[in-house]
Image (cartoon, rainbow over all chains, first blue to last red; front, side, top):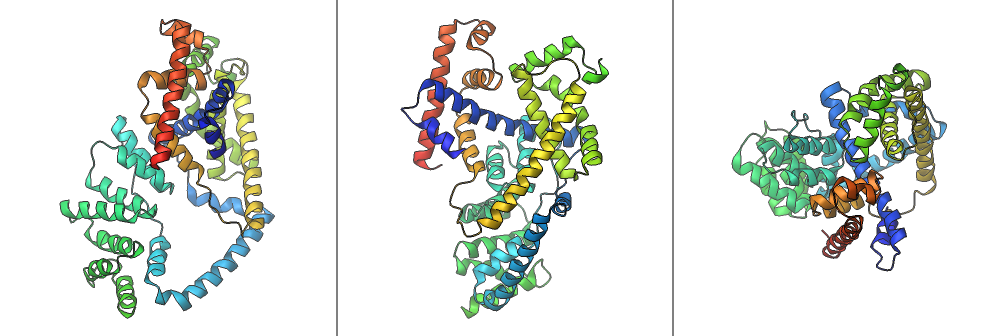
Length: 228
Length: 187
């Protein structure tokens, strides 16, 4: 795709070649658009959805995949063992680990057929498919934003490694509602840590009280930050 | 005969082609999205495919079917058989691709991935596309995606073929300019 785009942008390309390459890249884009549109229709009108949890079954059908899985398991074991030994001295690594420890999913697709709802549904679908870059784009294209939109937009930015932008979104949600306060305290702390803002991370982590979500993990991070 | 063609008459079959060439997918969806579940079931039953694999293969078959419609490569006759066959081929193709990917991972584990992902490229294209005017989007879509000849488009929107040809060149150039600008600014 990159080679084709570079060729397409080459000022010396012939008209025929330009048309041929443009036809191919436009087809790719519009095919993707159609797939996204049909995913929504299949979900909303026929209740058919792609179920990621079944992915594991296909791995068992190939000998190579079994070998790969075994190798991956060994590598994971080594990494986890190393993390036990070294991660305690690195709050950033711990934050990264915590962030990806559990799958973060948006609770549901919006209903309706307006363009606005379609963009929102695409933002949610791409978020749940872990295509965070695309999800950010759809959230940006929404003309009106609910608190939930801003919160998940922030999460998409965080998961797409855009930490300062994620922090801005989280701050914006906090100003308007305390609905996501516990989650925001946690994810904003993670974003500060990953962005290298240790002092702000400490301030945010201290706001997580002993009955809040992720209190123990917050204390572990604070301990490491204070020892640093 | 209509059973073999998902209930479509020959006239409806022709209407789908005309619609799809203008990127109007409504009628196509009415007919083919209804077959989605049945096709998935077939793939799961006949090939022991997983739910996800059957979903992806059926989706790929739909995309390929649209392309064949606009390219005039489908004949009215036995669409049901063709669609099921195509979904089966897509399933086998995807399985082969997955196997190759894993082999690549095993043999290229040391190679650092510095290339931007394809979705990033597509995202850049999407951003440039968004800045195009509606008439440009329509013209480029009808011509490149719907495979309409420029003379057919000219007739449809009652302009001279020369005007449409010029407009097409201008639209492609505009897209290239948007794309270059975005690449330079890195946005």
